[in-house]
Image 1 (cartoon, rainbow, N blue to C red):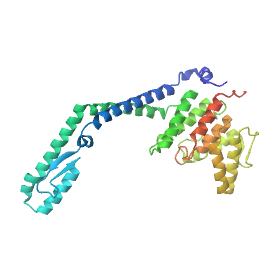
Image 2: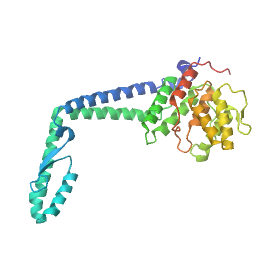
Image 3: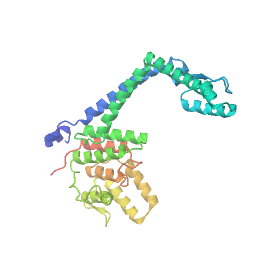
Image 4: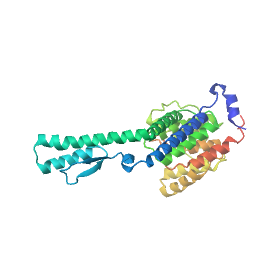
Length: 311
C-alpha cells in the first residue's frame, strides 16, 4: 500500500513533511486572532456609540447645523468651506474664529476617543489579533510554495485551494498554490511522475502544450482520439471524448462532457493527473473557476489507499 511511510522510505532526503505542522500553526494563529478580536469587540460594544464609531462632536455656532459628529477632517473641512462661501466673511477672521477652532475641537475629540478606547483595553486586544493574523498570513504565504512530501500535506493544500476559490481572491495566491499542488501530486502518487519537459516552463507556448504532453505520456493518441491501453478510469475516456468534440467544435456536447469530468473522482493515478491538467487554465496558470475540489480530494484519498503499480 502506498502511504507516507512508504514515501519516506523511498525518499529519505525529504524528511518530515512540514505542511501539516504549518497548517496546524496557521489555524492556531487564526483562532487566537479571532479570540482576541472577539474579546475586543465585547469590550467595545459596552462603550458609547461615538467611541465605537470614532466620532467627535464639533460645534460651529454660525453653521446651519450648530453641531455635528465627525470621524475625520475631510467632511469637516468640506462643511467649513461651504460656510466660508456662505458667510463671505473676512478670510483672516474666518480662519481664526471659525475654521481653526472647529478643527481644534475635532482633533481634541478624536484624541479623547482614542484615549478612551486604549484605556478600555480593546485596542490592545485588536493589536494582538492583528499580529496573530499577520503571523498566520506569513505561514500561509509559505504554504503556497511548499511542495507536499506526504499525502496529509497534499490534502491540506487542496483544502486551502478550495477555500481560496470560495473566497474568490484576486491576487496570485491560487496560481502559486495550484502549481505547487500539481507538483506535489506528481511527486507523491506512484506512476504519475513524468520526465521533465525540455521546453522552458516560462514560455507561453510550452505551457499551452503541457496538457497535450501529459496526455501523450499517459498514452492518449490525439490523432485517433484513443488510449494506447484500455482505460480503467472513466475520466480518461471522458477527457478523450472532450478532445474529440473540441476538434469538431461541438460546444454543447463539450459542455456536457466537461460537467461529467468535473464531478467524476479519479480511480486511477493517470486519471487524477489528467483531471488536474484538464482543470488548468493555461492563460493564467491557476485552476479553472469550475473545478470541484471535493471531487479531486475524493480521488486523492481513494488513491492514497490503492495498491502500488507493479514495476
